[in-house]
Amino acid sequence: MIFNIDVARAPFEFHVLFIKRVSPSAPVPENLCNEEATLLEPLACCLNGFSRLGEIEKDGVIAIVGDGPIGLLHLQLSKKLYNMRSIVVGKIPFRMQMAERMGADAVFTFGNGTEEDVSDFTSGRGADVVIVATSNPEALNFATKIAAKNSKVNLFSSFSNCKYVDVLDAVSLDIPLGIIPQENTTFGTVVETTDLLRLPVVGREKFIVGETAIAISHCLVVRKGVKAEDIDVLLSHEQVGGFTTSTSAPNCLIFLL
Image (tube, rainbow, N blue to C red):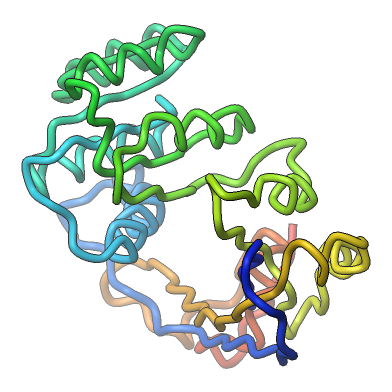
């Protein structure tokens, strides 16, 4: 569950609801090699991110902050699906060169003058969509500065060395809402959020104003012809286990790495 913190509205009581389910396996097309098939999962995540943005104006401007694999996937999707003019902001030269070869209309090095570069490219309007695909905490503040009025910002990446209290501090007249996690029903309550709600500012200057439950759906990608009962061992990151209560493979042993 996530909830919003607002600076202007009154608080109300809330309850926790988190929904989880595991989808069946999805076959990999035979014309894909194993290396290509490994990109299906991150590609699906990027597609899901675009779908959650709602209606996107075609021929608009998208700014992608981050020149890694996820950023470059967003670049290609923005071109294929929306024909958007694209900006990639990065730091690593060979990745930025790759972004240019993939069709980025502008590639800027992240630094002190990058905000002005984006402003010049968009004639002072800013980006219609901003995708944050880097764990650099500075990217969050940067994204708010380059976003156009009524734009959409997708915080696709988590942030290293970023605490939930930073979200609370950021809520202001300029940033009216913040979103932080409350609980998942397998791993339990997020302790950092519980501590945050004990701060004196909560209930005085900033208030809880809403909640939502997000359905988690994992999909196991397999070769065509492989059935759930054929899977004996599944190796997984521990976070996946924290969002999963069962699998469609009846006798599968799951090892959390």
